Image 1: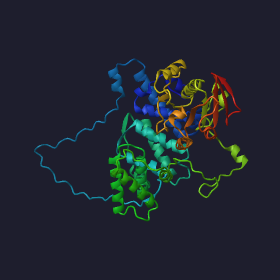
Image 2: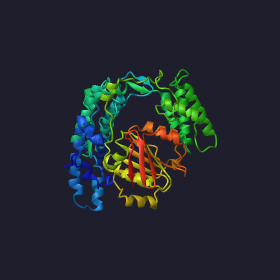
Image 3: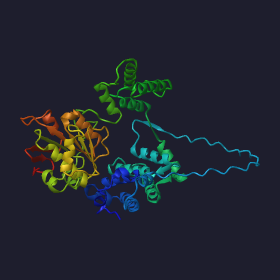
Image 4: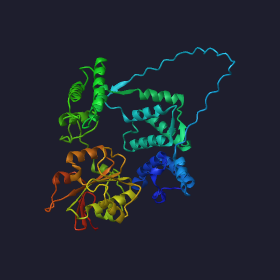
Length: 487
């Protein structure tokens, strides 16, 4: 049986890509629950229940499917999701005259009072997702994904105990966990009528502003090539919304939407293959739709962002989550907090990539999912040679030759190198802000004088600085007084 003590050692050789999606999702959940010496597992009874149910299901699967060698056709057959068989209704006898359909009272759909707001609250979004599952057949992976997302939102305090819907959230969480524990590969989600009615009331209590939805669609087209058909459809959506008076001149974002309308019109009518939104306009739009792309130069303590003041005694009582780093890397940099940032720099051929791949292997084996962006070397022989030499292959270590837009699936991201990726300080700010739970390690080349482009700006943005010189790594930063390590 799998336990928190033996999970990672027992599963280190599993090829997760060959397993059903539900187990891949469960593995991701365990990685999150195991952070900081399994603190979430020990402190949250619901997380503990889900993890133990997953351990039981995976143990059964390993015993049944992975204990002995299977043929390729058998393996494919086992990993296919089970199909839900629906028996057709029996046909009436041919001689029987069709009975007239009984008159049924047509029930009108209930009308809900909805408040139009800029950003729908997290607890309402989750209740809406759960209510939408009612009466539908869902897989283990789909149920587990919702549980995982919900528990992550609770731990990140996006959903708080003070929420007006805290009781409904707790009930929903319990129902989902019960369903996951008892279900097979597929199950029909059924919510009792009383709860379902309440969930629908909450789900319809808030509706997003039409102007915000259209602006989000507009921003998503920025910088993309050959999207004139999408731009045309969005152009027509804006026209229809105005004609139907869903957007009026009094709308808070009418001016911004008018600018988008004009930009779309120019793009559709012109020859440019790319829709480009100017930086000033895009900066304003990202603030509106809930994402920050460019750094705002504002002072702390203004009316928009009040300063947080706590007593020194209160600060000492606060808990700050670290990753639980051990061994030689703890001696080098200390035990950094979750979501730390680091920069690694040195002359070409000094051993930066070797150190970083070894560090990535350590993090993958002990602390979570790692993405190594090998932009400079790409999928070439030199990278393969380093991974083989350092024995860095691990199910939690992934390689890419570019920086993906979505990094939320990874606990740690290495970017090798910053200059090859063309990343500026604004880009670093954006990545960190959009992925607060992800740690970033940025790798830089230096000149013979030991300098690199944007040195001061970049160095001020990170928690740890690692210099590699002739096979020796030295550190400075916020988590230790400085360590040294020979490669």
